[in-house]
Image 1: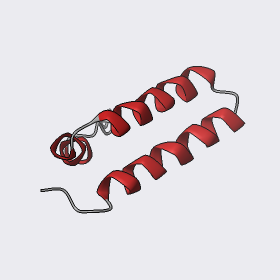
Image 2 (image 1 turned 45 degrees about the vertical axis):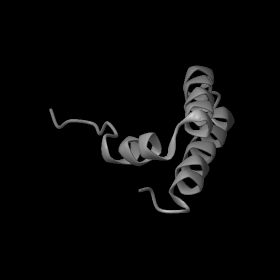
Image 3 (image 1 turned 90 degrees about the vertical axis):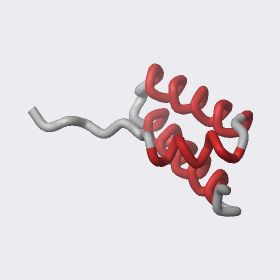
Length: 61
């Protein structure tokens, strides 16, 4: 079961990143982040929990 505020917290982080990308003129990144926000809004609670666990991090060279 997901924590009650997990979806909102994840959505807020995506919104903040999208705003920063837009401010920097990164249109592709902005679009991708806005699409991610839509997926968060549509996802079931179990899917949101797995999104935070399975996030991609940059790999060291």
